[in-house]
Image (cartoon, rainbow, N blue to C red; front, side):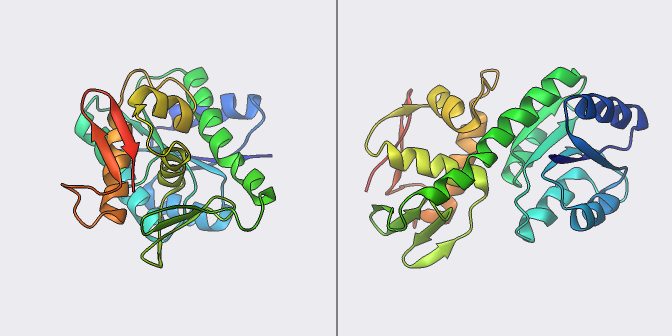
Length: 231
């Protein structure tokens, strides 16, 4: 049974999500502030985290940042009461996989959780691939079966979503891919037309892989269309 950690200081929201998640077959553990959330991640080792942005003791941004700094890549769905694009983009930059703005329907939350989990649960299948499978372009090597990336022989730490985006671009080397294609392929659902999530993750990849992010060698922007991988 998949274990979901729900973190929110509003008891009514926690109860609502817990009821609907359990009804959908998930095991649910809860936390009501940021510090408790970090403790629960370590003690309960959840498979998924639903994390509110505005929390006492430590806000959701800092929780997300701390988890990613500790290389805990558990998928995170961030909740925010603010319809503020900056908050959403910052959350994604810190390593959240998705976000929802309150108010939301429990059905939408569960749909998002399942969509993100489908991407994560697909990773064990790669282990059945031949050991020598490697995608290489320039000084970058991708090992799909290990979920590892090396640049100039140094291992690059990517979040799962960053890896999936890079792998998809590499699998379509030289082909222009629109933001909508990338949203559908990597996030596995319609992201309500918000293509900024693609731009944010591309920016992260460039910071980790490119010598000059303003003049990238590998991940090229095709103005008005999307991105393509060269090299």
